[in-house]
Image 1 (cartoon, rainbow, N blue to C red):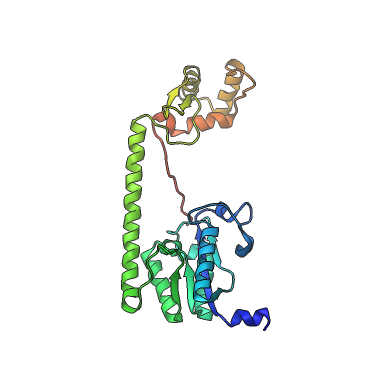
Image 2 (image 1 turned 45 degrees about the horizontal axis):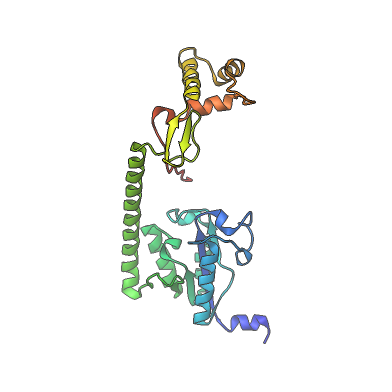
Length: 269
């Protein structure tokens, strides 16, 4: 029998993979065929999810066909309408009604109670059994328990995520009070001590920062005029040259007012 015959002699499986970062799909290959993408990331990377799916397919004597549907660089809280891979995954289940659907864990599918109910409805109407390929993930319920328990599990998961974020924020606030730096780029005028995990002011640079704010507030100078003044009178040594962009970044950085911003997210509308 040829390869095509062997393919359809096995039960067909729809597979879905979601990775939180496009980099986890490999360098500049996020648009390539998922089957041929290799990466070295651990955790919930593409390779981990794909390899677990292949092992589960072998155990059940089934074949993942077509290639897995993939969403990369997108959070699990994003709605179905923003996730092309998940949309195609569900459309395939509706149209082809495969015996199984493979997903690594629950949180790979969704973290929304509403979307959870929608996905369960699609699976139920198609008669497709959802299987989690991660060995540590509890299996999906059946019948009544499937439609009642899974939304409850999703709700509990969302509540846990909420508490984790609150604890993380409390820890970060405590670190700030202890003088620890949470941002990755140290602002001009400060130096970071890796040993003490704190930051301290550089007097000569602090003087220039104060001068910048003084010229902006008192003299009404704009970024360009301030940069020209500094280049003519305070060159900071070496070949360093001030630009209007440098000045603007200092004037708009809330760090100089005692505020550290962390975990800023922009949701696409």
